[in-house]
Amino acid sequence: MKIVMKFGGTSVGDAQKIGEVANLIAQRIRKGDSIIVVVSAMAGVTNSLVEVMNRAEDGDINYINGFMKKIDERHKDAIKIIADTEIREKTSQHISNKLSELKEVLTAIAHLKEATPRTRDFIISIGELLSTPIVSSKLNDIGVSAKFFSGGEAGIITDTNYGSANPLMDKIDELVKEKLEQVIKDGTVPVVTGFVASAINGHISTLGRGGSDYSASLLGYALDCDEIWIWTDVDGIMTTDPLIEPKARKIEILSYNEAAEMAYFGAKVLHPLTLEPAKLKNIPVIVRNTFNQNDTGTMVVEDAKTPSSSIVKAIAMIREVALITVGGAKMVGVPGIAARVFGALGNEGISVSMISQGSSEVNISFIISGKDVDRAIRAIEREFEKTNFVRDVIAEEDVCVVAVVGAGMKGTPGVAARVFGAVANDGVNVRMIAQGSSELNISFVVRREDGPTAVRAIHREFNLTTEV
Image (cartoon, rainbow, N blue to C red; front, side, top):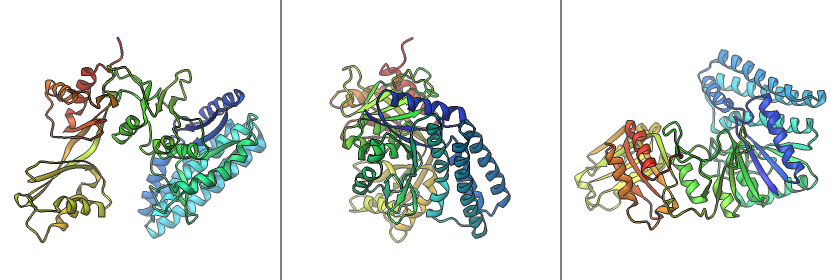
């Protein structure tokens, strides 16, 4: 089989784990598989790069110096897993060169007190550009022929929307084949940076936080792989967050659509866009635990056949959101009010995840990220400042979204009644409801403090708990 294996930050978090990852890859190669590897930054590194970048914009040179020492030590400790002196020294030199580039850029930002989107992408790409060569070198160290590629070098090309760049699929389909197919045929393992790509103008771009999954899916798509394996630190995709419901269990199989809904509504195991390229070529995506390799994980496929009793598959909860209500009696019957509201938000780059409007048209309610509240209110007030259509723009930040997901809900009578009955029986008041025409999910808004209670009630109602 031809398999893309993506390893998350916890899977390559230190020298020992990198050694274990290399051995895992070697085992699959000995079984006759062709492997393409995608690697995230070491756990916590991307967050620390964002922090040092922000501190650089404040002109904090001392913080930069302390950070550089720590990141150098961490990665130099990691390469101690490489036994071959020549390979280790070459990898060490690569790390030193990348960190020198990073320090120059951070120092320049500290003097200018400003970082452009393109510069920010360069900085946050460094984590993968440090970790991936270490994994590649360790493979060579244990006798597995491997070659390191940045995402751009592997053929992942994007537009210039730095920070969350959009892949150019036609170019990727052509270039990835051109860059990697012969390498694979020659028996060499391509080891590719996750998250990092190259913009069409040649500069480094990134696919957005969590984008290493997306990188793996893009490579699987372009190389017509048999499977895409996402290695992480959990056994698979769970029925809900185990921190909310300790009896949550692993889901054996999900459809692409179900998994995409879960990713969109806050399940952090998969990047929300990961499944699109895989779905285009019907490539199974398997989520597995690096630290529990005997577990088969969760498989995501086109049609996840389940028992008829499996109406609901999972429940997700998003905490960091706000409910905005735009109201005014003079909105009634006036064409284009909603278009102007959402147009104003769109111009500010603010994404809306849920919308509700009563037939009376007296108000429109919607959900946005909590960090966007102030900008959203200002944008709407500016849009209607010369009219008297809108009377109030009210933000409520003590809310969360609960999403109930399952293909079995489609065409099944009484699902909504069971969901809201279970929630009501546990004393939770629902503030807003939305259900898509696909009937794949029911989403609703409750007070943030009531979110866990609602999740547990639904989990219990649909018998999703682990057998005792």
